[in-house]
Length: 280
Image (cartoon, rainbow, N blue to C red):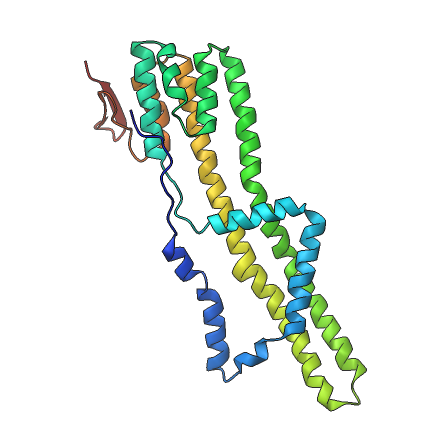
């Protein structure tokens, strides 16, 4: 049977390397145009944008949700455990055993499964739960887990919406300061700097940091959701006691190739489709 134990995840070094590219290009353009990098370093502007965005997010979400979003963002820079082929092979192996010996033969394998969603689904199947009930339970659990995985992305998307607004607020505050000191030319420069740099901070934080992280989290959530779709289809087919070749064909659409397990081999036909043969 295929190994379902989770593998140790590694840092995604390529993603970490390209993450600061956007910021670096902007700083390089600023320097190439003769501007000073020090002119972009404005503490009051950063405080307005970052502090205001953080406060707005804390009003929109619970602190625990924000903490989970930060942990998820850090985890997004780990190599994903994309074991869809292994999962498909495992489900095919289970279907072969269930077809040859019976569903009860899978009972001893359930405790060794690391994926709680798959473990729950097989438990329902082995307990001979009515098929409609199995599908209802799995659909409800999948929807709940999908929403749980997408929640961190919503936090960063909300922050990306607040940041440019606080950038504009910083610009307004800076212009107010300028208007208050029209009779003191020495004060005009710092006020204008806060005004324009605040806008740059807000737009830059949203488009160079927050939205890319949200997109990465949504991509990871979509992959996890696809894995659960595979589990739902596989467990449903096993519970219906479909022939293993039909199970392999059914779950093969989620993989690059139909898994070859226990005598089930993919074989392309002349029409370009896959044909699965159960060895005798």
